[in-house]
Length: 496
Image 1 (cartoon, helix red, strand yellow):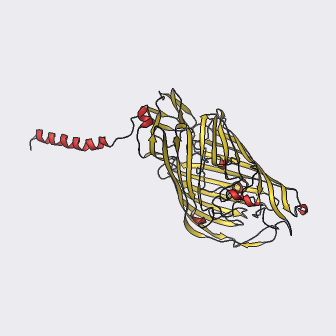
Image 2 (cartoon, helix red, strand yellow):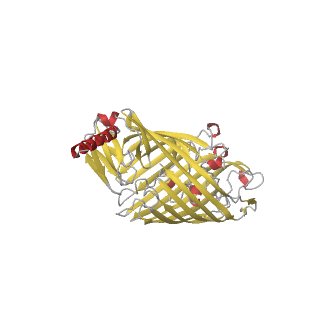
């Protein structure tokens, strides 16, 4: 074969290969590239009147519409480490894409002029070893109970989220299916829920549906970006409110000052049906968060400094919750996300004749305040929270013989963490304590997180947990009510 013939053959073969490859490109063209560093906000000029589509992220931080990116008539803005490529115009608003992936938000499987759809998966496999726990536990009333010393492997939780916007990018929806394998067969083993929200502007968004009562930091909406795998310290679990159905509002008062409030049915509606709810709707919860130095605390507001802040990031949060709870509206002790009103020895306050013969508490007013503070810098983080909870206005039978008219418990948690290898490995030490009339339980934890792909989509978490008479626990978490001793667990998480 002559040299000219060989060259002609190679060119024809290259064209034959290149043509199918070019034909596979169906996404919109990139018109704007806009990026930010952790702790900053950047604005990129753009004509957005015909619509905006996020083509793909080009960093390791999730870009979430309305949270870490957005747009007005003249520009696109990004913040807190979000960096992405954007398409503009009618092609962006009505074009078709399949499989665009945003870490922490999942896959965009539909993108049209009237709305989009994202599908996200969260789940993890857990090995749990509780064999070092004491086999029995004696509460403050002298009652002894057996502690099940578990050792098992579970696909412990699976959550599938469907989210996006409809008719207007300001109108957002989220729906999810949530199941916990360890609670199979129980009434709340599967949860189907969601909410709708409309963002009028960065200062005001109004929504309705199942939502977290913002009574502590861990229910503000940063799940699952915690240090431990899908489980709180025992003080947080003991004091906190949970998730209920209601109306919520949130927004930015001014740069670095946020509010979040909710009016709902009860402290925890997971596992409680409408027939069990009271009709007074006295549950209110709110939070005010100030971030004075960088006006942010990471793209997800999570625990630990995975983002590696080059400037000192700080936050101070104030939380309040009040609810008039009755015995019937409490979730079962093994519900998927159990939030019971307990004494500091683990007993549920509504237990018949707990406080003496003939005394049966049926209603109580729960009030709880908490203050949290923290800082992040160069991969290091120190974060703490203090709690005050008061139970009062006890009602039921035989209440006149109660030896008290209210109960006041306090407590705290403290978490320290360091990215020992940036975006690869994290180490943390944390602990909490409760001060109550029926005992002073505590826990301390040493844990490690490994991020194989240098992001928080896949995490391998391992933790050693020392319990001191835990007042909380159920099958989904590694601690048991009354647990005293060492627990080991290792978890492989996917947050796609």
